[in-house]
Length: 438
Image (cartoon, helix red, strand yellow):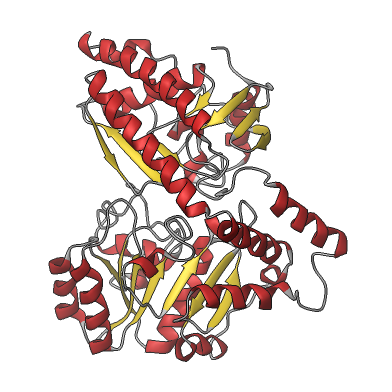
């Protein structure tokens, strides 16, 4: 496989852009160093054309979960084109803001007010600011991954392994003020004991409790009940992060399925199909405190994000997209399971059906993961050890993908038996977490 145009451009990018890309999850080193296409010319449905005009079926991350309907969805794009022609920014406000707020509140009857941002990480930072302002206490307990901001990374000031169980290994708090040490502490999802230990130790200082509604495993009933009960006792504000899970299991936040009534919920990714948009929704008595602190930004008032979100959410409702992506995701996960058994490959499958993952259970999993991605790329699939379903994925895509996976697993099985799978790699081994690039 000769160097593609994307890799040539990426070599230049690493000289001009610290880290090469704006998002860790899109670094070619996370997939297939030296060989990943890196950049795209166009995308449609679940297909991507690289800079060499090679077409691939995306059976991986679909824009890191942002394109829940598929790339360049015609309905969403038409809504965006309409507001572009009419003007995306002016001295006056976009009326879509109010319509979108009404729709989000209708889907979440426990909430009464809404604020907006344009990315998940900054929306979480806004939610934390509001929650601290309401509780008038600084300390945060959290579980799960919640972005790059200081409040989150400050957990690693106390212990450089604090975030190891929270999705991304190796995250450095360099640049986070040392004064924030001890201002946030992690606990594990479904681990009631670890949560209660923190509650008992810091109960008079805790102002905010942050958690994802769901990621890789379903919540046990007592977990959310315990969090809600303890939060009420100490007057802490509960924030549920729906940036990844939102609109995938149901119409709205996944917390609605699990009986969790938070004070604030945060959405991004799936709500606007690839256009920058995020929403912070919550109870009136909490959200109104946003006026007592300062949370304001010019581009939170642009019109494209709300227009895209309105059209996306309406289509999610009309087409019952959560059911479709759930069905597609289950077919892929079941395919992984059957094909791994057939080819004597040892894998572990995790994640909700629309956001599925698997891992190779060997001493050298990164070598095997890299080989899997390399072989699937040769078969014209963008594939790794995850699959994020979209409305654009249909049964025929799953069928062809699983046929290719069967062939790839068969090859990997033979390479494992030879005890030298690395000899088949045509480039370097993929990264597993945050690493500084040179």
